[in-house]
Length: 64
Image (cartoon, rainbow, N blue to C red; front, side, top):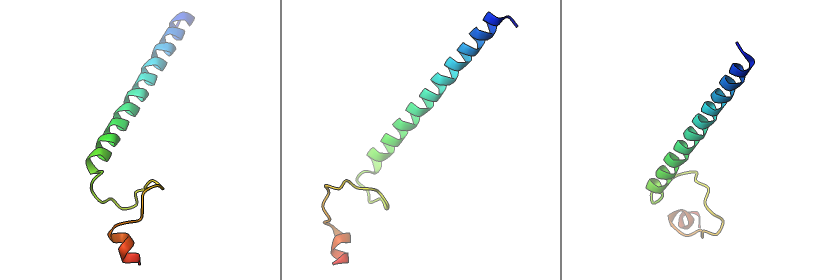
């Protein structure tokens, strides 16, 4: 194989792999956002909440 052909083949293969990884990452981020948007109103266990949220609700009253 010619050196120039090998360089072009390796470059195009790297470009295809890079675009594939970027596409999969974008797809998974979009799916995760859709999941979070859909289930944001439902009660989910073990979800890390923001520190600024208060401790009000049924769980807080049960602890008291």
